[in-house]
Amino acid sequence: MSPSTRRRSLTLGLALTAVALLTPRLWAEDANPRGPRAKAEINAHGLVALMRARLSIVVLDARGSSREFLPSSKPCAPNASASTVARLVPSKSMLVVTYDNGPSQTLGSQLAERLIKDGYKNVIRLPGGVQAWKSAGYKMRRPAPVRAPAGTGGRRGSGSRR
Image: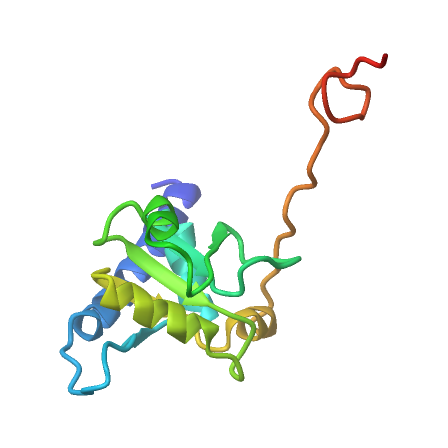
């Protein structure tokens, strides 16, 4: 077995272990009469293991627009339309991770609870959000800059002047 195959197998093994440990909490019934709550949580290291295993996972940034994001995440505010959520998470059985800025914010929890209420089955929160991610030593990504269309000489539009 080559070192890269061994490393990939180890990463997949860690990811599957994390999912196996979380699975009972994902489908546990909530006795809270106030409504659904996100029961499962994952830390930054667990999320990285899932990302590296290339599992089908959707990471949603509950902050909406921001200057920095976790890798592979998509902005989705808790009050986003159902069609927006359906576009971002095409299957209600997909694994979804929500996050916000940090422990003092509730946007990630609100988004997770909204997804569960809307019928999404596998919703996990990243408590501590961006702060926990950075504290664990992981880097954020910045959105790609918007570029002018080719052939416009850096100007937007048709490129012709009259």
